Image (cartoon, rainbow, N blue to C red; front, side):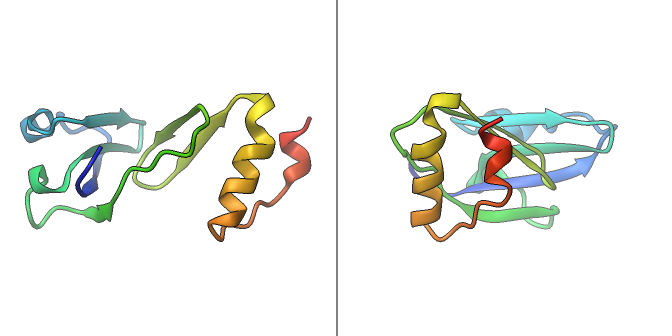
Length: 103
């Protein structure tokens, strides 16, 4: 997916904004505390509480990410953990509590 994306944050009880579906790729996640919308940056109106400048990337392994504005959950197949850890560390990330991934 080319282009820049933004993640907009709303209160948990608001309606899903109509502009979200205008993006070729979009995701909506609701928790009791917040509603997060990921959409093409060009679709997200100015002035919203949004984190802009996100890009998508391919790493060659199956991952499933569920994100809200405040929290990210990265799900990987157990057998892919070594490749994912190596890829993230190579990109400059530090993996804490690696022992929990192997339990």
